[in-house]
Amino acid sequence: MTKSKILVTGATGGTGGAATRFLRDEGHEVRAFVLKDDARADELRSLGAEIAVGNLLDIDSVRAAMEGVGAAYFVYPLAPQLLEATVAFGQAGKEAGVGAIVYTSQMTSRRDSKSHAAQSHWLAEQVFDWSGVPVTHLRPTLFAEWLLYPFSWKDYATKDTLALPFGRGKFAPITTEDQGRVIAKILADPAPHAGHLYKLLGPVELDVYGIAAAASEVLGRTITYTPLEVDEFLAILGKLPDYSSPFFTQHIGAVALDCQNGITGGTNDDVERITGRRPMTIQEFVTKHKAAFEVTPNSKAAG
Figure 1 (cartoon, rainbow, N blue to C red):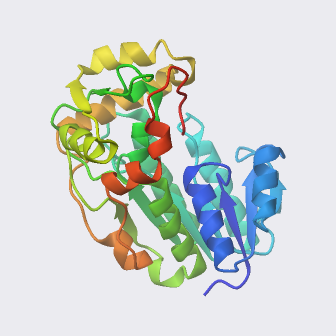
Figure 2: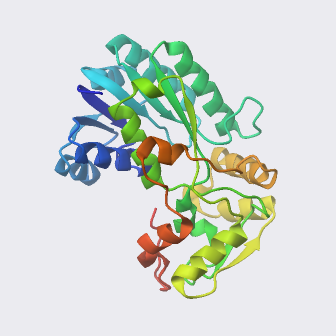
């Protein structure tokens, strides 16, 4: 079991934030690595986490945050600098004598991926393996949180039609909460998981027609699915400033084709075996976030 401090990057985000909460609930000492000391950092302080301010592209700030750390979690935004950040994190961990790294990659990570981001994730996995620090790789499938993004809906105000480029491709949506629980369990006791790669999948494999039906069941109104062509969907993203970067849209286009071609499919019991809890179904996720699905003219993205 990890008795020294645990470093969590992405602590103001989905998986890192969830992992921080679960670790603190279990009484572990957590150092949360954040880019800015702001209100979100204050929320982490309120949980009892220590705050380390730095930049994952700055090896000196990463190395300082690694001091006295027994295990560390690494996650990086969907951005071109992933490999640079990975090298800095791995080297800093090696210098500091960190005992374990947990890395969130992607389900579509592979050498021959058409997505530049997914191929970079595969390369990052190799870099961590070379580092000499024991590492556990996590490859989550598409997040259940896609249902909370404005670009997933034909009209976000009415939230009655999912408009996505996945055709009849299937996946088992996984929540950030369930991922955070896995991350926390491994960080708390990393030795049994060293060298392992886990695919983090939800309990039920669905296409988006099935996801729409599951959401309809909870919300008491009909949610439909309108499949879009990949180029049509990317054109929509191109009009949204937060989602229009070429790196992001290139990745989403490739992932959509992967989904259509079965790359994202399947399910397993990895989450339950590691955490002792079955991951959330879509029905449970929608129930938990029901307020986010309310139909109001001023609806805004929840995640």
